[in-house]
Length: 249
Image (cartoon, rainbow, N blue to C red; front, side, top):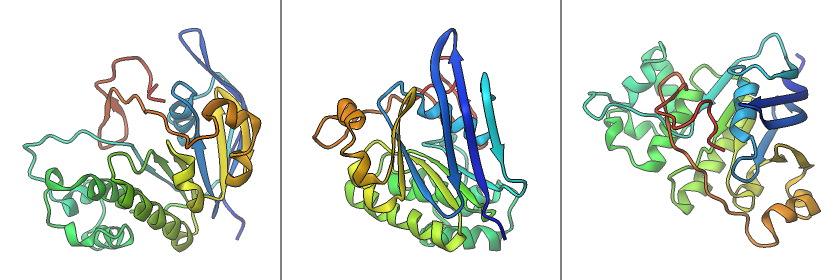
């Protein structure tokens, strides 16, 4: 069976006359983990929305295989704190059976929390619940927006290991946005460094030595903040945004 793929060809996009993405060409392959990095305002979230098909680029092409199944994990979602919603029921909102939900929780290594109200989950547990929801339908591509947001350093390493294992188990491609290449290096196959255009791409060890990468992040550990002034609902749509569009990159 042929591998599934998502390809962007010469994609450009602007918001209110400001260029956000300039001539982006990249290909995502089933079975490969790609990490997207870049400074604030680099266009990462816009690129993710175009990959998902939620946003149509001003120009260029998005080419996808016919049997594409996408799983999306937003950075965070907003859930009414008064809503009586267990983790298992949270997954069930995606119109899945209890057996499917339990299988997804097991894959995300959070089956112990199926009866826990989502409001009582720790930061790491909530991210794993979101990951479980993303793998619910056994996608051949996972799109993960800052999957370790709000997770402590030990939990981040563990979660990246889970994502790498899921990629192999499901034979799915992964595109994830990360704020720290050094932390995710061992869990990714390829890195794309974005700053409105693709500055450099390749193996993690190659990218960290690329002059374009060093110009942005310097020679110290690449850390930058993710200005996230909004939340997502259960469908991944942006709610409560301070600006038009999903410009949280």
